[in-house]
Amino acid sequence: TGEVACFGVNQYEAFLKAMIAAGFKLPTKNILIAIGPAQQKIEFIQYARMLADMGYQIYATKNTHELLKAQGGLESCIMVYKPHVKREPNVLTMLKTGKLDLVINVPDSMDSQALSDGFTMRRAAVDSGTSLLVDVKTAILVVMSLQRKHTREKSNRNFWSFNSWQEYTEPREAMSSSMGRD
Image (cartoon, rainbow, N blue to C red):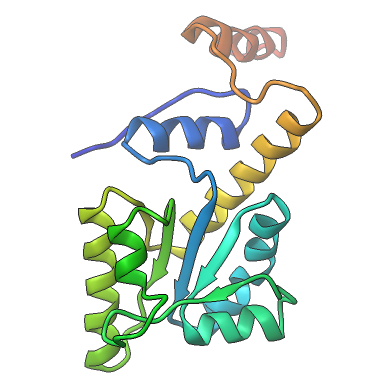
């Protein structure tokens, strides 16, 4: 069913390794954010800012774009049109031409137009091979992990560790036995 477990020196490294092992491609430049539920939009503002601070170009659909600019101060955020709006820049065109590296599309259980737009957007992301996140908690953990990776690499420190299983587990076993645990 696609479960992947990976080791890392911290949860961020292990999580990104597992995501990559499951076929997720780390974004390099352009990220689309389209979050339906208002509370989750607000919750994600600080993480959208983190992405922008790391150098990613943020694109967003109309309502998400307005919130990110007004409450998040993300002036560099570019608005894109939803699939049913036949204007450019349109999310479908961007996906078909490979201009997006990651789509964060958290669905809302609103009207049928919102559902069909969201479905069309997610389907286009999958069809174009663009990484897709549909859960705000997962999106937040991805951003936090990318932030940790970015910070370490910016200070010329390695983010990725390549150790044997024993190297990840033995320190814990040694600690447990020194505390009188088996």
